[in-house]
Structures are given as structure tokens and as C-alpha cells.
Amino acid sequence: MKATEAWGLSMHILPMHRHRHVSRRPVWIIVLVCLVSLFVIFGYVYPPENPSACYVFSPRGCKGFADWLPSYTRRELTDEELASHVLVQEFLRNPSQQTENPKIAFMFLTPGSLPFEKLWDVFFSGHEGKFSVYVHASQRKPVYQSKYFIDRDIHSDKVGWGQVSMINAERRLLGNALRDPDNQHFVLLSDSCIPLHRFEYVYNYLMYTNVSYIDSFLDPGPHGNDRYSPHMFPEIEKDDFRKGAQWFHLKRQHAMIVISDTLYYSKFKNYCRPGFEGRNCYCDEHYLQTFFNIVDPAGMANWSVTHVDWSEHKWHPKSYRAQDVSYELLQTLTSIDETVHETSEAQKQVIVKPCVWNGVKRPCYLFARKFYPETLDILIQIFSNYTASV
Image (cartoon, rainbow, N blue to C red; front, side, top):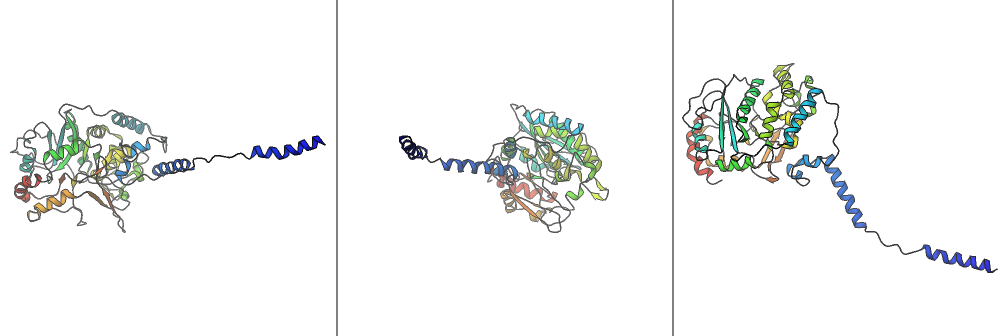
């Protein structure tokens, strides 16, 4: 009986020990960790289209964020690709050696004389030692008046519009400019280009940037990805194909990569030209744009620092006559802080993105084209007053 009572007592006592007070868990910490994890995963799966958003994750931009996650390869690389990728990564891992006198190389691609030589003389004056000039004149040897252009011609060959010879001329300019170790930045300009800012502004804008300015965007239409040739596969896939203006700015690392490239260059040389297999592919609109989209997409801004007006929707951009040039025009061009790209599909898409310089939204353009030679006098007249105020 006593045993039974003892057992009954224990039956009543034991539950009292099992129903202990349980302290509340820090639920808010668990919720916060989950939200952060979802944010990181979402950011990787759907990368931010706004370049400034990339700097939320890393000062290096979107590429720095991707570096957090395991790398993968969609397919096995060909021998040529492997060699190319190793070379590119070696250049990117080893920043260019900083010199005591870093300069910008201004590279002019022109058929003959430079109609705005006097304007560039005003632009360069007083800044000796901070720039170099190189001229590729494909048809006629220019005669210069400005000391900044005399004896600055390089060996030049004929250039055909839309042909690989245009790329050859660009690479030739880069090769000559790279011989000077002080040249840290490289700008490609045409004979119809003018400066929009004073030299100091341009120098600081380029010298302290963390990207190269290469105009590059996806155009799924007939004047974009329809120009892609299946012969470029597998090294270049159709989804990687890009379009843009040829007027670039390159950091020294990227300039070295361009002149070292043989694999992607050969693809465009062989399979991108007007009339090839019924397609009108133009190397200068696709080669660098596609190349850097493959090898270092986060290392380039997807716009050019040279303004071109395509608003007339013609085969060639708007050209400026003397009556078009005014203080207000230059003010308008230098205040633009968004890029606009339009696709060539039947239902055109207009892509508008902010111009982001080192994570900060800033005006996009340092130069502009296409200006007729008749605008020279009025440009010189207003240039000094205009640039003093911007």
C-alpha cells in the first residue's frame, strides 16, 4: 500500500519537474539573419541593373559581390580560351605600376587633317606633361600648326568603314601609346570630336576612375544580336554579343588586354563584316563591347564619355552646324547624367541608366561629336568662357 502511495506520489511530482519555464528565444535576431540571407541570395540571382547599387555590396562593384560565391564554368574551355583567360586574369590581378607623372593618351583616328586642331590646342595649353597625343591618319598626311600635334603621327594604314581595319587602327594607336609607361589612360577620338570641359576636369575624371568607359548594351534586334554569327561559337555565345559606339576610354590594364588578344579578335576578323552570310556586322560596334562583356564586365561602365546624338533615328548620328552651336548647347551636353540606348526591334526598347562615377551619379560626357569644321570659330569663341564656368 505504501509502495502504491509512493508511486502515486511520484506520478504527481514528476510532471512538476518537466513543466519548467522556457525562456523566450531572441526571435528578432533569427528574423534579421533570414532577411539578410534572402537579400544576399536575391542580389546574386538578380544582380542590380543600376551600377550605383553594386557599391552597396563592394567598392569594387558587382564583380566584388560575385567573388563571394563559388565560381563555376558553364562548359569546358577550349585551349585558346584557357590561354586567353589566364592572360586576362593575370593583367587584372596586377594593377598597372603607378608612375610619378601619369598621363592621358589622346588618340585621334582621322582620315586626314584635324579640323579642330586649334580648339584642342587651347584645351591642351598649359598642361604639358599630363598628356600625350597620337594621330592615325588613314588617307592623307596632316599638316599641323599646333606644337602638340607636330610629329605625333604614327604609322597608318587605310581604314574601311565597318571593316576589321578599323579595329586594327585602334590597336595600332594603343600599341604606340602603351610604349610610354606614363600613359595610364587612353581615349579614342575622331576628327569631328571636341572637348566639353577644361583639361583639369577631364584629367581628374579619368585619372581617378575605377572603370573603363566602353559603350556596350544588349540589342536583341536586327542591328544587334541578329548580326551574331554561329561561327563565333563556342568562344562567343549569342547571349554574350553586345553593341555600342566605338569611342572608348581604357585604363592601362584594359589597353594591354586589348592588344594582347588574338582569340576574340580573330573571331570578329573572320566572321563580322558587312555582307557576311547575309548579315551586316561592323567590328567597331561589336568587338570591344562583346570582348569586355565576356572577360571583365564589371570593369567597364556601359557608356562612352563621348556624346553622340542618335535622336534623329538615321543611319548616322546628328551633325552640328555653326547655327547649332551655342553656350546653351554645350551646357545641355555637359549636364546630361543618364545614358539612353534604344534597341532595334520592331517594338523598340528604350534603356535609360544613370552615369555613375566611383559610385556617385555624375555627368556622363567629356567630349562630343559630330561637329562640322564650320563650327570651329564659334567654338573657340565660347570655349574659354564656357569651360571656366563648368
